[in-house]
Length: 90
Image 1 (cartoon, rainbow, N blue to C red):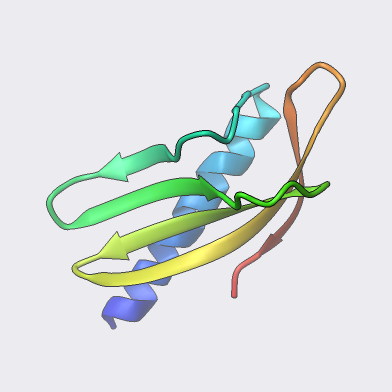
Image 2 (image 1 turned 90 degrees about the horizontal axis):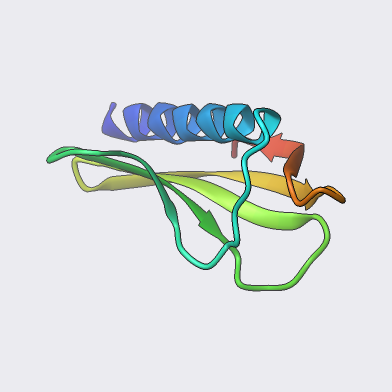
């Protein structure tokens, strides 16, 4: 059950990131973005260090010691805002 809850938390982080991108969010990929952090849960967005286009980022969640991730592919637009190309929740 904790694995399922952790995966739902990672999906929640991915939904947050899609909304962030759709609202003109910008990111330099240098540090992870904390989405939610408490004593029992940590949800964050992490970039893959490889230079690719589209860029591969992950929504990661650690819930009571159990971790999950959702893969997200984003492309940077001409005005340096981000566009989500694909979300793969597995």
